[in-house]
Image: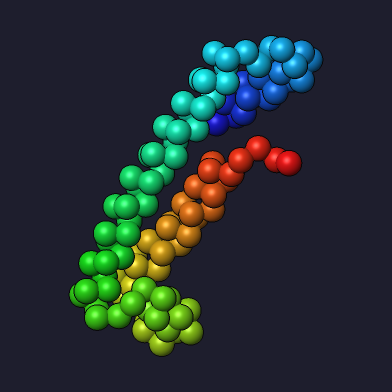
Length: 107
């Protein structure tokens, strides 16, 4: 990942030196990368939400109710509960990442 960050930093520096450097091709490439990553995260989120639905069906409990009870220590630490909790955390993290990708330019 450091190599990628360095490339992004170089691109930022390049674009900062000349406003016209951000031609249409660069802008389209960045748009496509953002769209591709957004779709990848949406697909992953869909799969994780399906797993959550399976847990909810198996234990006849909404994920929000499960999470509150699990956090209070009422359910123990069975492997399925740990996995359910981890899946909820992954979905929350994906939502944050998707929000960043789907934001418009700063105003």
